[in-house]
Each structure stands twice: as structure tokens, then as C-alpha cells.
Length: 466
Ligand code: ADP
Image (cartoon, rainbow, N blue to C red; front, side, top):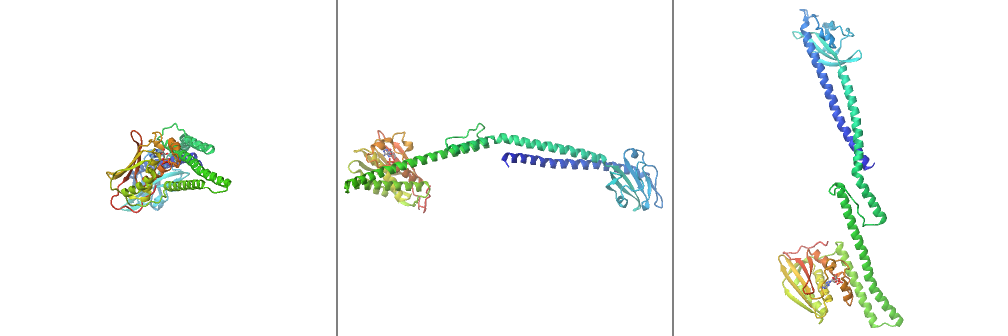
């Protein structure tokens, strides 16, 4: 059953239920009120008659006169003596030989009973007549309940017709109003189907209504999901294209060298060196990709030990000086003793990637200054070079996977970068609850600053990889 039909049915049931309760309450209240009125009339009549009943010394009864108005007011009277002997009855009684209420003749106190008499129902009040606590007869005063019954019947019909009209109106109203309220959802369904059919994640669902209502919020959430999916889809597509491209270049070089050696029918050292260097390059690429994949899936294993960052830095500087050779000046600026919590090898990798980039992109004769200090509860590691700097339009993208600045592609003569070094550094620093900042140096050059929380006492065993 559709949501719309279910809502319409729900409205109808709720209205029907309320009307049933309300109708029952009205019906019962009216019945009780009218019956009470009849009871009051009967008591009033009985009180008026009793003074006219004379009880003889032997207990025999005699009725002087019955009040005249009783006969015209639709009130029936019977006076029964000892041994259920009829003493007197109002002349309007259709059958005076039988008591109006047989069980009432046994009453020891005034009782009301509803009894059927000659096709109609009568309300009968039986009042025992007693002398010195001895019951010598019974006065029965009865009145027809037809007015009460007719009123209740009319009321029942009015309530039934009213309930049916209200339920139909509620059902129709519910059907129409839910159609109006749910129509934007139709649009959501149609757009979702079109997106699936056309494989077009760039589409969004239009909504004219207020954005803060439930449907507006749903559409907004759906559009946000679409945006995120589109982004992921595009990233994945770009990533596959990039990986394909990066893998093809070294493979082409390796194949070219092998073809050459085959044609020459001998191995030559130059080709072998080239093959080894390309295999190394592929190995690095695969390693970097695996690391990033682990980092992004939250499965990057990370130690969490106390790391003497200054010692690690000196170690890396030693390695990097070999790379810089006489081409560049790699200087150590101010260096402080700094302890952080984390994975020593990964932090070393951050330093290698950042200092390696400075060496790669700074032209011969340039200068790189590395410093380490503390600021509040954080360690601050800086790598400054006076290379060409990073163009402002590249800065927002340099931490993306495979992003390489336009100049870097053409400038780095060995073409060894994959555009993964900064992504890896970013992930490692993030997993140490730190941040990386990049800024331009005047007149030209780049400064990378890595902020890491200082170790506060013992390091906890594991830090989460997210
Ligand atoms: P790769 O160095 O392999 O290209 P990275 O992720 O390490 O990839 O760096 C991304 C880009 O950031 C580089 O292509 C380069 O354009 C730019 N970049 C990084 N470090 C520097 C630097 N010290 N000087 C100039 N440009 C840099």
C-alpha cells in the first residue's frame, strides 16, 4: 500500500476513533439525562399519590382519588394490595389486570425497572406501602420511554451520518493534502532514477519550497550526498588515470631498453642502469601508493613512542647532505630538544619528503635552512628554501595525490616525482594530530612548517590512524 494511501487511512481511522468515543459519550449522556428526567417525574407523581392512599386498621388499602393530571400526562398508576390484589388503577391503563412490573411487587424499597408493556417500554417506579414496618401493598407509577428511545434513535442516526461524512472528508482531505506534501518526493525519485539511467552525478534535485522543512532537508541531504559521490567518483577517475600514466612511463623505458639489448644481442651497462633505476622508481611508486591506501582506509600501522625529534632531524640532515652535495647549502638553523609522541620512521619520512622536495626544487647555489623549536604545547619544524617558490594557484592543491605543479613537471630534470610526497607527509602529520602549513618566502622561496603536539609525559601505546 502506498504511503499516501496509508496516511489517508490513518487520518480516517483517527477521525473515526475520535467520533466513536465522542458519539458513545453523547449517546450515553443523553440517555442517562432523559431517563433521570423520567425518574424525577415518576417520583414526583408517586409523592403526590401516596397521601391519597388510606390504609385501614386490618391493613387493607383504599384509594381516595387519583390526581386527575396523571392520566393526561402519560403516566400510568396501579395500587396493589395484599396478595397482589389490584386496589386501583388509572383509567389510561391498557390492561389493568396484570402488574406493570411483576418483580416490583416484591420490592422492599422504591425501585425503578424498565419493562415491556403492550409493545412499548415503560419505566416503572415501585414504592412499597408499609404500616409499622409491615408491607401491605405496592404503588406502581409508570411512564413510557418512547420519548427517550426516539431521541436516542434520532441522535444515533445524526451521529452515524456525521461520522460517515467526517471520515470520508478526513480520508479525502488526507489523500489530497498528502499528495501535495509528497509531490516533491516524486521529483526526488524521478531525478534519482534519471541520475542512475544517465550515470550523471552532476545533476541536483531542484526544490522550490522552504529549505528548512522536512522535504527541503531531505533534498538538501540527498544533494549533498550526490555532490560527495560526484567528488569521489571524479577523484577515483583521476586517480586511475594518474596511476596508469605513472606506471606506463617507467614500463616504456624498461621495454625500450630490453628491445635495444635484444637487437644488439648484448647487455650494455647503460641500459641495465636505466632498467634498474626505472624498477626502483616503480617500487617507490607502489610503496607510496600502498602507504596512502593504508592511510586513507585507516589501516596505517603507527607506533606511538616517545620520539626525540631533534635526533631524528640530525639523522635526516646527515642523509640529505649527501643528496645536496655541493650543489646546495643545507643548513641547520636553531634547534631545540623536542620530544613528541608517535612513529619515528613515519616522522622521518615526513622530514625526508619535505627536505627532499626543497633539494629537488631549489636551483644550484640555493640555500635550505631547517629549524626545530617549541611554541606553547607544540613543536614547530620549519624547512625554508630560496627556490622558485610555489605559485599561489598551486598551493591549495599540493597536498592532493598526484598533484604536481606545472613548473615542477617541466623543471625537475630527472622527472622523479610522482606528486605523492606531500600527500604522504600530510597524512602522517595528521595521524600525529599535527598540521602542515606552507608559505611563500620573500623575495622567493618556500617555507613548510610542521606543527606537532609535544609529548606530555608517557606516550599511550597506540594512536589511531584515520
Ligand atoms: P613531487 O615532488 O613528487 O612532484 P610532492 O607531493 O612532493 O610531489 O609535491 C607536490 C608539488 O608541490 C610539487 O610538484 C611542486 O610543484 C610543489 N612543491 C613541493 N615542495 C616544493 C618546494 N620546496 N619548492 C617548490 N615547489 C614545491
